[in-house]
Picture 1 (cartoon, rainbow over the protein chains, first blue to last red):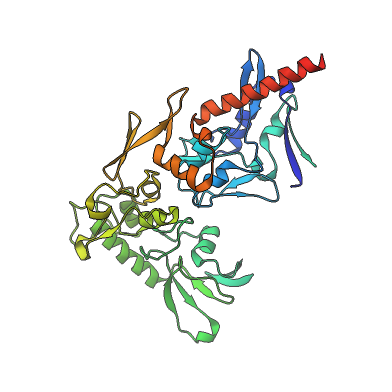
Picture 2: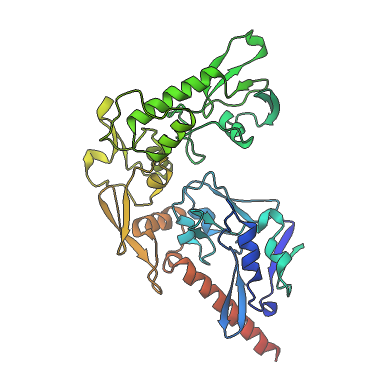
Length: 135
Length: 258
């Protein structure tokens, strides 16, 4: 893995710009997609951007009976192969952090793919709470 | 890497991958109903027929199902010859006779100029095109709960003896993969009904949201060694939990720093 996606919650102000950036960068058929990142409040006015952690021992990959989820060695992300996905929701149920989700608008399963190595949320984060750096 | 010619254009492709995958990657519109990446191709719908030839064949050509034909170096492929269009038209005409009520088939037939079937339409039948995608995906899952029963005109996809399928775990893969959406299912009050069998859905202990059936969750826990705690709450609650957990760590770290 050459890159690391870092989250610095202390810098997050909960502006949800990342959500918008994510939804619009994953737009399909002129419709924004479901955001893969959510800044959630753990205390009043204190936020943590919750996004897929691309685990070392991922439950989503283990749960997929059709091998639709695979580690992308280039970006380090776990990519979902939409052509192979059957939408059985195994990954949605199995992810211990709830970061595999259902996009009802596009009728598909979504999970963070780090935008194939160029994350939109990182570019738009005004306080640099999200960082994508070379290790 | 193999080099093949598709509609007069030389393209690179991996040796051994199927022709349909290359055609789709190029964005060429070749219809296919029963093809899915998760299952082995079987060429049941036959709509993805293409014409192949090689220079050394001296003008000989043949029509093959592209989903089943592996890429070979030097292959010359044509996807829209008049003969192929006629074949596809006939196939869609036949499909339309079999499932006149399917919107997808109607739309595809319309594209090939078939507005009404020239055969006797099977008005009372369901929209199943007998592509076996459902049985094949069930096999991939390791269950094989459904299969084709009877022969000829009476052939249908059904669980053994038409009873509740013993091996079915209610994962919905068959209903999701079906190109014409003929497998009915219902999620209601925490119960999923498919193939007339009732399944208990795993309910989130915090908010009551349901995602998968208890049987499917148990299957994943057993087969893939996923801890059963992962299935107790829904994705929304798990994200919130993660935020709170991380928040707790931040608060603790701040206290230590002070």
